[in-house]
Length: 202
Image 1 (tube, rainbow, N blue to C red):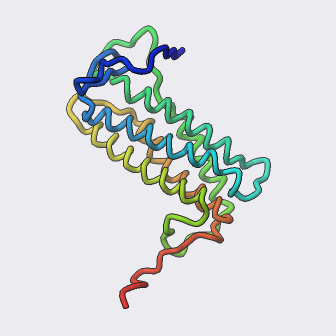
Image 2: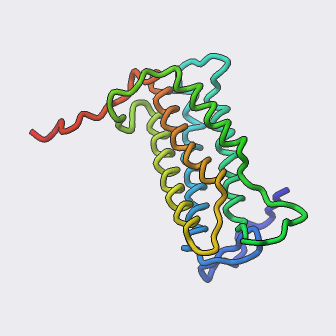
Image 3: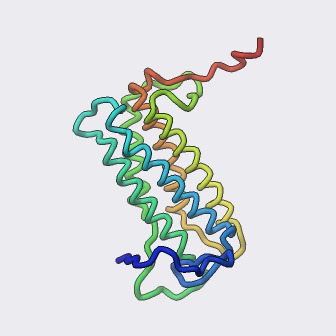
């Protein structure tokens, strides 16, 4: 259980921050940048959560967009906890294993992507970010999640740094999920704004 009694601690005043393991890293370390960008993705989804009821199309019982966003936001806290607890090579199995992203969370994203995508017509061009307000927020969250993925991949390639395969799969699927959801809320793709290559060259 997380319990926060005091918000400021002064422990980060010298440019370091504490991990869940108790170790401290410089605030510009790739690990900190990775889970900070995951947090940024979550904040962008907060904007989706508060606007989705006003702009989303009516849905059937099988598709609950607000519930999807809520589950993703909770997953992103799981992912942040995962990244803030470094997995050490050849470390003994602890008595209380740290929270890690599980394959089931990746599978749920894939199932939701398929559920939303079957309602959409195939794309004939790339989609410009925009449409209605919810779709615009979803596109912003999507691009931030892609940045989080780049930082996570960079971290995974550093010496003695481990990022689990389910964590990498989750952040990769998430951007696909947010893209499909953005199309779904754009009148199931009918209000998508499509890219016209070279349109303004004349």
